[in-house]
Image (cartoon, rainbow, N blue to C red; front, side, top):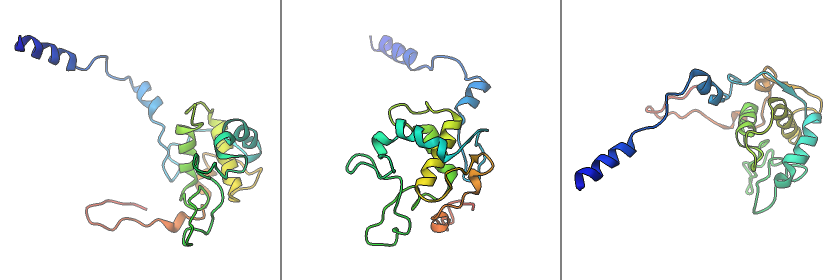
Length: 170
């Protein structure tokens, strides 16, 4: 009896399916790096992102990115507050790279339908969030070339880890 149970357990533990095809792996490989590597072709402006944000993001983040207290964090404001007694960590005050904003929106937003935005919509919403923080102009185009060049207010607020067992590049 024990041997039969053991054989069944081994049979069920074997992986099922097939190896992923290169195109399937590539479709899931959507990582965007701080320097812009991995950004897809596309474009968007804050003026185009405003109506998208209003219809797909404001329910959680409010119209001006101020968040909903106790539910969803603010994504705008707080620039210069990190050294104060009441720091406000937002996209504008805390995040070091605009490319990370794009990557996060692309992967995780809207909260109830992640990865449902087109590439151009992600660029437009990213531009709008940056605009809410006073970082880019309303008609400044964000694309795979311009987004990595955006200088975030806290870009130099992060320092490489100097421990010898940690490899860090900057």
